[in-house]
Length: 315
Image (cartoon, rainbow, N blue to C red; front, top):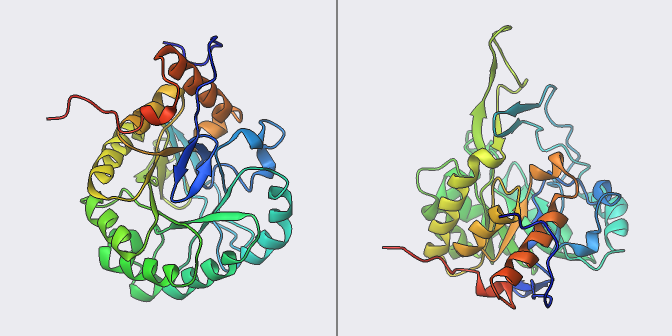
């Protein structure tokens, strides 16, 4: 079934609400795949999106990893960009004036290497006009605890989320790493520590080798795997987390078409983020939105919320 073609009928409502945020639709970019919004403005109407999610922000500018840092895979891509970004001060000064031109909520993604860095970035974003919510990336190494990734240790995750929660009044989205034994444990810890929303999944850890040179295809050796190849894992984890927590969930992972987004919504995600598809087609999110509208019409639905959590056939 092709959901990208035009069809007649009344306009279904795609509006959703997440932790008090009223979004015109459930589609937004995944952090790191959409720059700061300005880069994609020539290709699609930013006012059409449910929200704009920024590239991850840190306390100080970050140059990222050496190249090569992207490698295409059979059904996706590996990346080890290294969270390159302009830093929180330059973002507020240079990037937010452009984003304020649009009637679309801005979600600022951010990270740190210590608990104090996370808290400080959150505090600086708290009073920024036009930032509607914060998305906290806990897939980062804690340099003060031997490099363990915050998101792989529920105790470390809980501590850093509590520190951030104490420094911001804005809705707090916590983005989970899938590189854990049981995603439900981390999700429960995030909710108890004060998260208002959970987004998942971040990339899976992967590696690719050039067999002729016998060298890794990316300079960092390992990277994050994204794209359609990870979608079944992401849908499964999203379903598990929806069943575990009471707060809203945003689904991420390999969404290329409207049908892919619908999988996440049907298992209970209240919104979705589109990542790798933006590199393939900068207009991908508008195409997905058209497909969601057409699906609702075909199904005789007046409101996309009728689809959210509508999974049948569970034991």
